[in-house]
Length: 397
Image 1: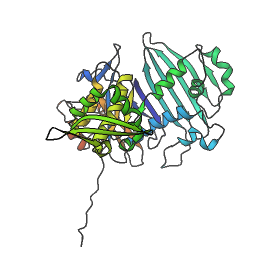
Image 2: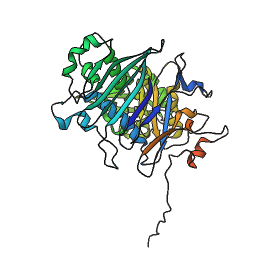
Image 3: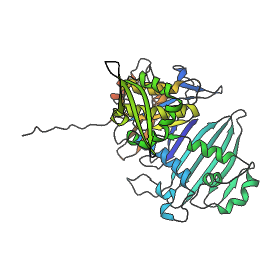
Image 4: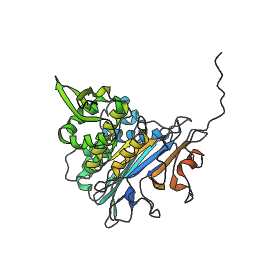
């Protein structure tokens, strides 16, 4: 479960920026929108991020993607400086002379422990890295390891097992990535690595990615067809059935529509609307996250989706039997309403005159009890909207 994601000097986020899924206990509305683990803190199931074009809201999505890719790839190609993960994903703020390090940190909860993991890096080396574990029953925090360019210090719980690998860790490789590849008695590296990698970064070219359909849709048709058809019926696609055929390792998908005459007519999935295809893929991602209690990030979730369909997708994550979470960016303000969201579920990104992106939550503002979130947002009260200068379009001659 995602608690917090922090970044600094990454893309348009020059200053330290914290995105937090922790609920504010003072807010009593929409308790069903929260994950309640029976502890003091609760966490939101869904968070929406609004911002103007070029404000940097998509950069939060890409920052999570870069953070994850460095963890996955930092042990690869360490002998080739040009192809190391840290050189590939070192993308500091561009609008000034800037050779400062970039930084990521994530806080996640897995069972009865909270893990705080992060690293600082440039295109040449890992500058710092750290991992702490907090027992949520006792509130006791222990150090798993701390790393600088000069040393790696292991905590007492893993020191004996890890110490003799100290000199083998390349400067370009994360400690987490290095020990995840080894067979060890401790499972803490595999646990934290999985927590990072299990965050599902939904591709931006969602409708064009046939590989996702080829890989996952047959499994849903074979094992979850009833649920899939119920979803397609609920969003009014007119699809009565769905099937696939395999021919020489190629998969073809067909939907079945029932005509006015009561007969069934097949249609290739590629002939369905982009909104239908995107909805189907989103359903696959959402169900995968819900069944595995994972978090998914989606950029521009509203694209090619009707607002009511957008709400339908969001509502999938409000089931009480899962701790799955959805984080998405959007332009669509239709659902920016107190009827649907709490104030700690809505975020804004805006860019200042120097090109710095700034992230803020609706909960950071003093909001009247009778306020319209959407109306005040479009009026510029919370920021995150485009500043439009007067522009006169000339008539054609």
